[in-house]
Image (cartoon, rainbow, N blue to C red):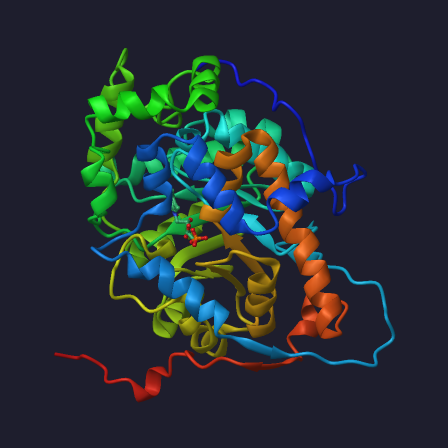
Length: 419
Ligand SMILES: Cc1cc2nc3c(=O)[nH]c(=O)nc-3n(C[C@H](O)[C@H](O)[C@H](O)COP(=O)(O)O)c2cc1C
């Protein structure tokens, strides 16, 4: 793989010593502004891959965002004006803010070299960066850029009785990954209409439309020429010797299959000595099973509305999962986080750490490497203001606030479909 160029410029403010360039704050006051800029700068097929979801109407992603919007927090006044801190301690590490970068396949499609930009930005801003099994840069390369904040995510690869999974977990441990995340919510490939319309399928064959959109995205193209075509960088050791990038893609597609069973989670628990998280949990009973197997963290997630169209918003099932396993495992959350206020909403409900996926991709697409730093700092900055506004100094204190959550899923009142 081509050597990863240094990001053009780094910006961070928040807890970093550099001053925030006000020009970016004025130009991109919200994530929606970054999204629009990304749409203009990035080839259509790459933007749609990130922005899209499952189903004809892609309602899952919209539902996540609207469910968060509906959560109300009652502010308190008259306190001591204590300095606020959005810092979080989880799995023995301290992070500056409660919004990490969720695992995502091929950030380098959104912006070539994206994984390196994310890793560096996360390290500078000291928030978790979870590298995906299907990333465009290898475990070993990324770990160097994010020595203190590197987490690794695994999909199930049943080949040779999980041999590749165990080997990737070993590589992650050797590279210093702080946390291993097992994704459970991809039992099968989902149907994402935008990807099909754009011919984003493997084996990859560029269409005229793709070539046109690349040629009309000059910044992205220049970055591609510098970084080289993205590939599944964790995989070449397992594919046939001399396999082309397309062969490796095909091998990845054939190898990732099904979701981890509880028995497999238990086997990975035995071999991975560090903190283990299961991601994609939506039912309190699944959370309880995971905890009974010795899992350290539950990441409540519906994969950003990219897998199962009829799933509820992930924030709406969060309280029931918290009530089932809170205190027995760390609670993590993702799905629809677009602002510091959203992160405060999740924290007020009991999430120790939230993750955002698309938000970071929009920053990357809008501003290249600079955008990764910008988005990390954007969240930290907004969370500080949100804490101040509601009269608490820390995220732990935020759990004592009065919260109204109209969409909270009442499992005991919902008909259980037992067939
Ligand atoms: C482009 C893209 C690729 C993703 N790839 C993965 C992946 O490889 N592994 C995984 O566990 N989750 C993956 N996810 C899901 C995210 O980790 C996360 O659950 C989701 O993005 C959160 O929703 P949000 O995008 O609204 O923040 C992906 C999400 C996006 C947007």
